[in-house]
Every structure is written in C-alpha cells, then in structure tokens.
Length: 305
Length: 305
Image 1 (cartoon, chains in turn purple, red):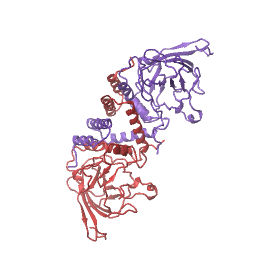
Image 2 (tube, each protein chain N blue to C red):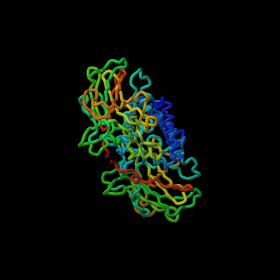
Image 3 (cartoon, rainbow over the protein chains, first blue to last red):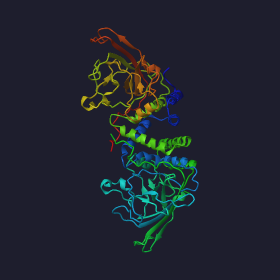
Image 4 (spheres, chains in turn green, brown):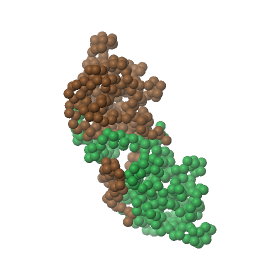
C-alpha cells in the first residue's frame, strides 16, 4: 500500500522523521508537519495560493543579503519574533524588558569614547544626549560591559540600508563600554518614527493588507555582560504617535523613556549644545545567567547563488 | 496600554489584519498567525531555534534560481505539496490521480513528433517505448491536447540541473500533441530511482534526520486539455524499491504502470530497437472543468539581488 488519504498522509510524514537522532529536532519537525498540514486542511489551500506562498518565500529569500534580513522582518510583522521573545522571557525578576532584535543588527560596532557624537552623517535633527547605566537586578553597577547601540536617521533609514554604507561605514551605530559605575553617555539626534522597508515582499504584504508600516521612534540596545543574560531591547521615545500600533508589536510600557526637551546651553558632561536639545535617561537591569548574544547578519547566511 | 502578554499578542497580530480588503487573504493571514503562534507557544521555541529557522529559510531562498526551486522541494518533503494536491482533488470521478508537480518543471517544452526519441543526451540506459492516450472520464479520446513530459536521466538528474543546460537545452523533456484518437508515443530510456538534490538546505535536513532522499523511478506528465482540469501527475515504474517510501510521498497505486520488459526487434510503431527494451502503456482520463496549468519556474520569481 503506497497511497494515503489526507490523515494517513500526515501520519506518514510525521513517521518519516521517527529516526531523527536529536530528540528536540524530531519534536520540532513533527510538530511543524502537524501544524503545516492542519493549516492546509483547515484552509483548503488552493494551488494558486500555494504557488503564491512559494513565490512569496522565494522573493523574501532573494531580498536577504549580508545587510538586509527580510525573513526576520517577516517574523517581526507577524508577531512571531515578539512571541519567541515572550516565551523565552516569562519571568524577568525585575530585569529590563526585552524586545525584538530587528533586521538591522549588522555587528560592525566600534568601541567609541563616552560622550561621543554618533549622529548619522550629514543629517539634521534636534540633538539628543543619552545618559545611561547598566546594573544587575539588585542595582549593583556593572563595569566594563559592552553596549551596542543603533538607531535610524531622520529619514528613517539605518546606515546599513544606504547604498554608500560600504564606503561611509557605521553611522548612528556604536559600542560603548560601561565605566566603573556602570555608566555610559553619548550624543546623537532625536530619532523619529519610520516605516519598515516597503520595497520587498514583506512591505508589499503590509501595504496590501491596509496595515501601516510604521515603528515608533526608538534606539536599539544590546547589552552583553558576563554572568548575565544578553539583553536585547529598544528604548522608545515617549509621546510617539505609533507607540500603540508598532508594526512589529515591539513596544512594552517599561521601555518607553521620558525624553526631556531642554534649552540649557550645555549637556550634563559640560559640552556646549544648540537648543533645543533632548535628554534621554534610562537604566538597564540585567538578569543573572548566560547565553550567547545573537549573531550579526551575514555571519551564517550563504551568498545568493 | 501598549504591551501584550502571550495570548494578547496573538490577538493583536490577528486584529492587525482586520482591514485586509480581500476576505480570503484576510482569512489565510489570520489563520497563518494563529498557526505560527500556536507552534511557537507549544514548542517554547528558543532563540537559537528561531535563528536556525531564519537561516534555513534564507539559505533555501538563496538556493532558488530560474531552474531550481528549493522551496517547492521543502514543501514536497514535508508532504505539504501532496496535501494541497489531496484537498484540491477530493473527488476524482474516475479521472486519473494527480501527484506533485516537483521542482523541475521549467516550461521550455518544445512540440516534438510522435515516436521521437527524447533520451537524455550522451547517456546510456535501456530503451523504453511509451504508448499513451488522453481521454475524458467517459473514455472519449481527446485530440490536439498538449502533453508535457519530463524525466530524470540515468544519473538521476533532470536536464535543468546540469551546468551545461543553457547550451545543450532540453533533454528527457518534450511536448507531444495528441492525434485524432487522443494518442501519442515517444521513446526514451527507462528511468531509474534517484535522490532529490542533497546539496541544499532541504537535502541537508533529509540527511540529518536519517530519512533517505530517494524517489521511485517515474515520468512526469502535465496534460492540459481545453474544457478539462489540467492533470499534473507522474507515471511510476512497477517494481521500484522506493515505491513505498517516496521522499515526497507522491506515489498513488493507480499511477504505478506495469512496464513490460521486451526482446522483440521493433517497437509497436515498427522501428528497430535493441533488446532488451521496455514498453510502458498508460491511459490518462481528464476531469471536466477548467483552471490554469502551473506557471513554469522562473516566470514570476525575481532575480537574486
């Protein structure tokens, strides 16, 4: 007997993975088969729809490069990234909340002196001074901790999205090392809300389904201290109109920072600044533990053929 | 309130698609969100596993070219393609059973005279003569019907998988037009069982999970008659050792043809042939209806960036 009716087919595919040596891989694959088959049966998926899905996945793959990750974007806009984040961070024990990594962590962050201006090149925007510190969950400062920072420019683009990225290099992107008191500071411009890229299949889906493509203004932080869980998060700017409808569902109340509008002539480190400027103050609390920080883009993926 | 617990998150993502204009697209997307979120929650998917999935999908996309479709292969080995086939062909009403299109339909089939030898170039193998006809479900012959045929060579490769495909062109691949009696004939070599490509992420999964990568020997047929449903199927060679464990779950009993081993000096059309040779006889019965034949590879997908 070689042929199957619908339920026999699903059972046969599940059984085909019975000899998978790794028990977790076996579980994940067999559950994947159940889930995919349930979806096809429940929706009575047509050939045209299947064909559309194959084409959509192929175009999504072809959009991925060393500096662009369209599959992460797809996972983000379907809320899958935030759900993976949620199931892996069920108990924060007072540590700072986490959110999505996003598709623009490219891992070329250069250690930069405290107070340095990392504003995107050649761009205008009101200045922002960021003062922050890294502590454990008991409030003890953590020294010597690398903190990767990245944010979009006034046009809503990350440095890695620009055609001249290879020649210009990092911009709005740096690594700081906390001092003996766990502190670090930098200056940049006040980020603004921006759309996810809409020139690929994921953006096309957002447009066709009448969703808006906007993310509320934020700065990304990746804090990676020895003996603690790597913290992947954003700090959002209070008052942004998209805080309630982030296209990637990444906002958490605790991650919204009050950013003060200031008119003093100097930032807290005594340097001159043109008014008005903005002061962001935010503290990070790390949970004890270990684990690897995420690999930056381009490290594992093969080049397009 | 901007943040969600796990079930609120799923509801928020489902709701984000509420304004999708096309009701079927809305249904498919909202069910997709439920299905993906159920999977992540049920499996407690880790970041490393999510990262592996993103990388796997990216590599799968990068393997896709105009002549190779790794996502169709993925759908095939997970039994999804056969299930889509099943839910769309629940009542055959006596028509020939369908099976997967497979990833090697490249749509460059040239109309070829009856009786022509379409054997793959420069390859050995015992000769096979195929005599076939196309009828409706009442046994009435259908004249002037295009029938696309494709099969692998003795090394288990399709013409389109070979590096010299652009210069050599179609091989083991042709289109025949049925005559007034619905008949067509051709000669080729007896196909053999062969592995799916194992040099990509899908093949890697098959190997790592201790599945075998083999498909039983078969010839692909795509029969596309006016006023009838396009028939996408294979005819399998009886006796093949992989009929019970096809890696893509594509076998149906009715599609296994008895292929006779012969030692006569001529094929049924009177032409000389070296013994031993093989005679495949198979009739196709088409269901009334309409619908589009599948688009060949490369027609819709964008080029890699």
